[in-house]
Every structure is written in structure tokens, then in C-alpha cells.
Image 1: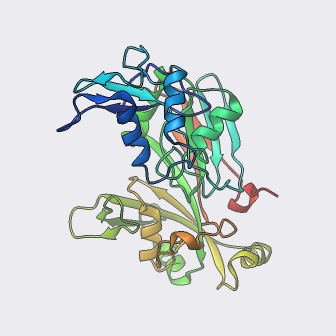
Image 2 (image 1 turned 180 degrees about the vertical axis):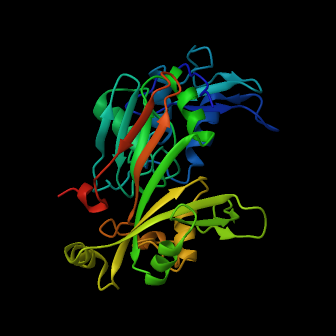
Length: 336
């Protein structure tokens, strides 16, 4: 999982873009045309990223080969030539929620990520991401997440502070050697609470399913086959009248609500959201389950109430047990 080094440094929180000249008819292309082809084909492009901006990159020496040598606009590129340059992010609406630092040391930065903020740059979410925002506010250019949290999910994300630390910590998460606890808010299902009270498996219910979610599809689905998604439901706690009233100010009239403590064994995309939906208790504010909301229906004032509350693991470097927790609620991170 080691990231390939690049000849251009991280600039204003953003990694450079790497392209390789490959494909029929591309060998012999001008450097400026190769860069332009990538920029002009972007679905999300800054309106000012035009030919003048492309030539400004070359004039500034910010279009380079893999060895760092600068390219000129009219240089002819052979096949398999690697080119590095910076994209100009398209305008983005600011996420009206704040990141909060939970823990910081020489190796790790642990934060509470708010809803509506992606972990890493992707598609139309570039600057308004936890990685870029934290690099800018902390001044630690090499910050990199050891794992990802869905854009709509809130809670703990662990970042490494130096490139040499990425591999050990990313491997830790990739190999599922991390214990996580999530909290979801949904309708108080008394039948499910009764099942939990009667559970013999360490006083918890276990949901086992086989989930599939194809790239580009908004919803995942259950399919037949060996389970690849396992979630423990550990507790259901009724929301207080004050909490109920606060939530109804945002989401409108609701049935009695409760907090669900969830401990996933696996980490499939949308696993907790799908398991809660299948159990008859879709997560409050979820814009995909059960109904898919259109992109233009997204409302920053109506977040999804799923939080990564706790993370614990044996540190891959020191061997010590590390545990982190956030007590912030989804609404606590809203900017006033």
C-alpha cells in the first residue's frame, strides 16, 4: 500500500497528478496537449483552467518528468513517459461542519470527521476533504489517512504524519486488526431490543450477510453466498426527551428514537447502513437507504446519524494497545 513517490511536493494540501502517455496515437503528443487532454476531460473542472493556465504551469516549471526535470509545452513525449503537474480544483461548497482533533503525537493524528466531508480527495470533493483541510490547518503536508470513513459518516479517522508510517498503519486497518464501535440513531425497535435482551451470543445480536456494491452504484445489495459482512449489535438505548426534541427540529416528527451500538467485524461499503435498513431501522438522515435522494436534494442541515465512536488496536510500531474515543455528536460539529 506504499504510495509511489513523486517529483513534485504536496502543494497547498494537494498531491500532484501523474499521467502516463499510453495508447494508440498518443506517442509523439506534445506535453501541453497531453496535459490539456486530462484537464479538459474532467467532469469537475475549474472554469479558469484554460490554455492560459496550462501554459502558466509550464512557465512556472510545474510540469515535470518522473526525474523532476521540467517539461516545455512543445516537448514531444514518447510512449510510457510519465508527466506530473498540479490540477486546479473546481469550486466547492464549503462543508458547514468542523473537524476536531481528538489526539496528536509525533506519529498519529486522530480526528473526529464531520458529516458531508470525504476522507480523501475524489471526484467533485477535493478541497472540502479531511485530508486537504487538515494538511492546511496543521501544516503537516504529508498527513495521510490510515483508513477511510464514508463521506456521510461522522467520527474517528486515524492519520499518519510521515510517509514511512503509512504502510504499517494502513496494513493494520486493511487486515482488520482494528476494533471499531459505531453509534447509529434510528427508530426505537422494541422487538429488536427484546431479541437483544434474549441473545445468548455474549448478549449481542449478530447480522451476517453477503453484500455487493458495484462502483458507481449508490446502493449496495444483499446476495446469496458466503457472508462477507458481519456486524454485532451490542446495545439499544432510548434517546432522552431532550434528544428526541433536538433531532425532530432537524428531521421533523419522528417515532421514538434510540441509539444503536454497532461493532462491525468486517468493513464492507455501506455495511452498517444496509444491516440497519434490513433490520427495519434505517439510520436517521440516511439519503440512500431506503430511498435514494438526488444529488440536488442534499441538505447540509440534515445529516446522517452514524458515528465511528471508538477505535482500538495494537500499535504496529510500539506494540502497545491504543484506544481512541469521541464523545461528539453529529450536531456538535455544525458551524454556528
